[in-house]
Amino acid sequence: AETAPATICVDSDDDGRCEDEMSPRAALGSSSVALRLDGIELTPRELDLLGEQGFLNDSLLDFFLRLVVEVLAPPTLRDELHVTSTFFFQKLTSGGVKTGYEGWNNVQRWTRTIRGGLLAQRYVVVPINELNLHWWLAVVCNPRKALEPSPEGGSANTEPRIVCLDSACEGLPKDRTVCFLRGYLWREWVERHPNTA
Image 1 (cartoon, rainbow, N blue to C red):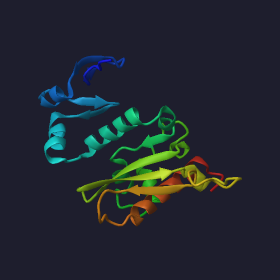
Image 2: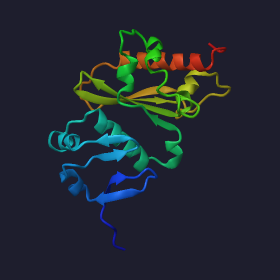
Image 3: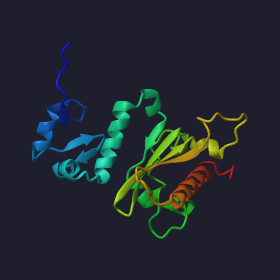
Image 4: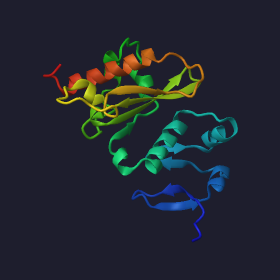
């Protein structure tokens, strides 16, 4: 069977139907095209940066992380996975805060719409930008298991942990980032369970 050529939805209406489709090559060449996915919009300039210089800015990373989840992740995983905005960690650490516990105030409203809250997610992916030059991902696995007592021992794939995914050969130490995330998660738990802290 012959497969249809790939197309990109260039403009969709309010009910999610695609009004205008074109080939990826035509989309990249058009000066008035912006790609959109779940409210994340890419401008032609951002697409040019990606093609020529391999430059990833916050919008490109947000868009492609969301695209990877939507296209590659099985539906069961999508329900257990939350990818934060590329601005989440920057905002968490802003305003002179010294810990993630303090930084919680900066982002306390960012996860209110997540069913069960951020701690109900099995995986939380946090994009981290180092020195405005390099992106890497912190993946918080099973955050709730670190905070609530468990009657039975967990298996290796359910143990809480923070996994740092960094392509840099000699990336910067991750200790500060991990400590901030732990402090944030603890404060999130305290705020949602005031009688257990």
